Amino acid sequence: MAMTGVLRPGHAQIRVLDLEEGINHYKNVLGLIETGRDKQGRVYFKAWDERDHNSVIIREADSAGIDFFAFKVADQATLDKLERDLQEYGLKTERIPAGELLETGERVRFGIPSGHQIELYWEKTDIGTPETYTNPPPWTDSAEHGIAPIRLDHCLLYGPDIEKVQEIFEKVLGFYLVEHVLMEDGKTNLAVWLSCSIKAHDIAFVRHPEPGKLHHVSFLLESWEKVLRAADIMSMNKVSIDIGPTRHGVTRGTTIYAFDPSGNRFETFCGGYQSYPDWKPVTWTWDEVGAGIFYHDRKLNEAFLSVVS
Image (cartoon, rainbow, N blue to C red; front, side, top):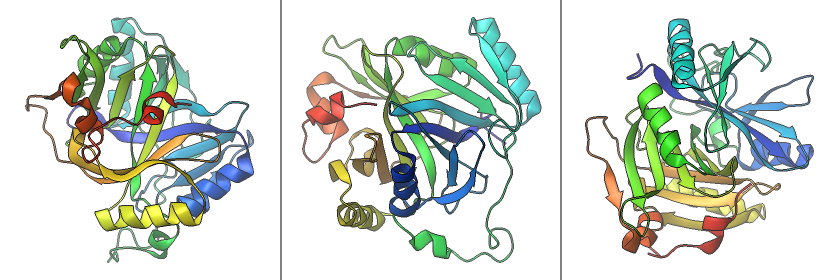
């Protein structure tokens, strides 16, 4: 049972400029498993150790970016309650019918002040693998194809009014603040990392004047060695790398940031600590923000701050 009723990140729908290039990247370079295509032209993927039908959906569009990011909740009662709570808070919600996404039940979609669309749902077909539930091996053949992350882990979104966003996630959805970076005034948050679990973060936000921007979607690997292997695969496939391999001060994760062919940034990472909702949040001050983001370099990469989709 979830700590708050929100279980975990469930799926992200990402816009790509060329569908075939996108399919090749997510399927063969990143190493996700294609699980379906729909009449709208969307292509569905999951990571090899995920059990639900999809976690990443791509569609061709004129501009790159993210359409929505979704969280799976515990059950129908939780979905109904959270929708009422969102409405009582003053947010407009929309019910997306079951089946609009392949193998996915009814979804509740709502906009947040940063300009992003967030979804909640509770039903999605469990397709697992033939080895998932009875005498399973530690890994399957799919775990060796491409970078092969374990799961979709989190996303970082850029937009305005992140203090209002934080309040929605904490007061309505039951998330808690794990870490934050302060601006020069020592009071205003530049960035917040929020969790609905014992992970260091399930979603994060950075203050940015343009609404609705994607900084990155992140995928979990098992070890630092797997992160280094991911760097090799990226170079072998001429993937544009933003920064890494390196370590974050925030969350302590080891990481590589790179771009899909459409310019959507993605992260492959491992590590990070376990967190609990009764813990006091970790604070990074402005004078140490470089080490907070990139602990080894101890300085910020300008492209990392400014390039979003």
